[in-house]
Image (cartoon, rainbow, N blue to C red; front, top):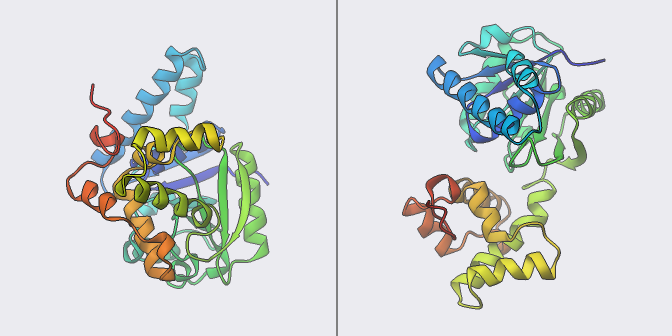
Amino acid sequence: MAFTKVAVVGGSGTMGNGIVQTVAQAGIKTYLVETNMELAEKGKARLDKSLSKLVEKGKINDDRKNEILGNIVLTDKYEDVADVDFVIEAIFENIQLKKEIFAKLDAIVKPETILASNTSALSITEIASVTKRPEKVIGFHFFNPVPLMPLVELVMGLFCSEETYLAAEKLVDQIGKKYVKAKDTPGFLVNYLQIPLLVGAVEALENGLASAEDIDKACVFGMNHPMGPLHLLDMIGLDNALDVFTVMYESTGNEKFRPRTMHRRLVQSGNWGRKTGKGFFSYEK
């Protein structure tokens, strides 16, 4: 079966916006759900701007841009998405707020609707526990920037059914992405592998082993990574990364996930990476 209606809760945020674009450009009616219409309008304006850049680069034409935008419906009411096939929650990493959202969605959407979370570290099983459909709750973890990064981690909570997993695979195929199957353990698969490298890069800088530039060059030219770890942290957002690292460390107690002091200080000073103009590197024009 092909999915025809998908809702993205938190669709004006960085991740949510990218998910909305990715789903809408696959020809699926996509509901951008926000807490108020002003935020929803800002989210669509961001998409308009992103798509306009693709037009300028000759990657799509104006007709294609308008077609994608035409697939997007803005709303600030969960009742408007009662009959969608699939909901993807994409808010920031706050377990209590996510559970509140899933409880509300569970009471409104049709019984067969699959509920998914884009969380990068929080427990899918715990999120599913507030619903009456834990077998239909799954992790649907995209990577930033969503339109460019090809992978989605499909995370199986303790009670997630194989039927739900197979349906999630179909949606990933429909939106033109690749997938891996992961267990509901802290950090799932990609972050479990990647965070120790990111933490290690910050620690190397903090201890004066090398400059930020050389640490990144070592990974790009010595390990064949497409981007250095410090530039990657700046792109993710140091605030977002700190949230994920903290969840990983508190969940496992493993030192390899512990956020380093330099990382914390940059976040505390408001230097969060590209979105603020400065992090480990400067992006100010």
